[in-house]
Image 1: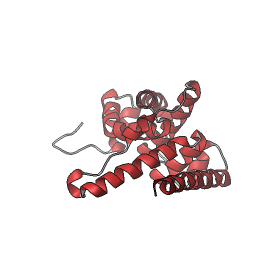
Image 2: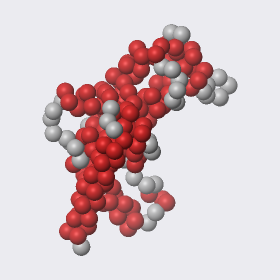
Image 3: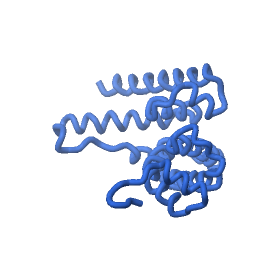
Length: 190
């Protein structure tokens, strides 16, 4: 993957991979696999399903690589593939959501904060995960893409095949549901 300690950029790897170089594509997979898996985990809320989504996303990317125009960064293109695969997999697997989404978030480094703040942070993260997990998949997808990955309303709408106003409505509903759930949890604790 590296030559002389320098990581090849995605552009060079993409050019080589598009011409059929499997080693170059393997390098792209190694570079982006953690990011792809994290997004899949946030969307599916299931570690095993996220691993399946990650694998399927890279298989689809390899097959579609000759059609990749390069209008977007490779990572953005992969995000879109992951969202599509996640939706497809979630529809196939209509079991109830599980708690493993908790493992997709990292806790702050213990040495950087006091034990009291660490405990408070863990409690807040737990509430946020539970609230996020309770959102319907179409709403949760928009919230994650906007608030975690910073996609624009236009990008979200285009990718999900909905209008910009629909993306904004889903985001508004998702944030409102999260706010309601988190606020009620705070009032119960007080």
